[in-house]
Image (cartoon, rainbow, N blue to C red; front, side):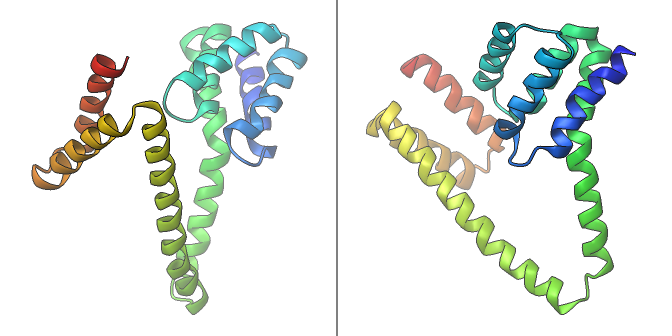
Length: 176
């Protein structure tokens, strides 16, 4: 029964929530704290703080942590699954529609419009990372890390994961 309750506690907010992790956090809190009483508001706030400190989507991290706290490894798996299933179903449905109408001129035009939008979103993300880097680490460190990353990626064809790891180590040693 606890697995079913865990599934519902994370599935419902993720199926009705729109806007990603930050938008569904209050819905998850209503389920976990209000409806089921698995945690206090303070414990939920601490879990949220921990989730914000780690990389990757917030809702998935919180689901894993809360599920583990409630029902161990099985609970973590159920809660994470309930968090990802709504997006997975939506993506499979959209992919099915796109595949069915892949030869349609409208779908081809839509696909052509998606690329520039993604490029602009990536440019905005890069700009915001650069701005944060300049404010936090300063010009010298930001340029040094950026130049080293560019050389490693473009000239030596280093895997991006290793470049990120090296930047994290540099930040820990010289900026921490």
